[in-house]
Image (cartoon, rainbow, N blue to C red):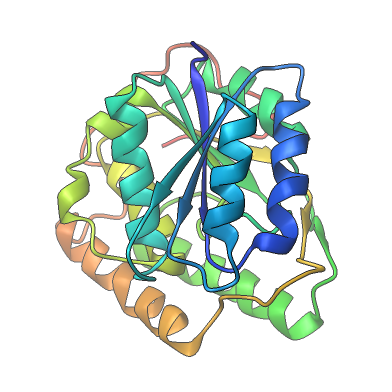
Length: 256
């Protein structure tokens, strides 16, 4: 079986799912895909089942209702660990993340516990965002760095690759956050353990189909989450333990 699985939460992504599946299956590096569908009213779950029946590397996990991005990822991570995958990706279902970057992530993961795809490493790499959204995102990244001490350029990004041992070091049942705060919390929990975390540059293209899931609640949750993480780390702005690098950091790395 493949060592790599891409976890894609979906809610009303029927317009994008078939294209995403084809792009993932056409990669030279073989990967499996797990679609975690939150009972999408537009029929995304049914389409995912049809694609899974057609392609053995496509799997589907159905959830009864929409309960947030974080809950969907936690369910997907548990499934991936139960099925023995070594490299576990987060990937948006709206085609904003380029599947062609997956081999780059896997190369970086040879020397890291977590690989973060960064929209801001050595410049801004975002297509189709208004200036207000860009300023909000960059402001949020700066805010997270100042409060928590994490050195990463894009702590709210959702394109990631976890090593199996990294996810196994986290008690997934105690993760309560969703949205941006989920991305921040997962990275912070590994960073404060002293795990090796690197960033790789990606190009982010805003969705052309469907509607964004961004909301005021997601932003408020992320705003307060960072202070809770700082308290959990005993007000330290550094890891509790220093990481022991397996090999020198890759290009574009940010290491604790």
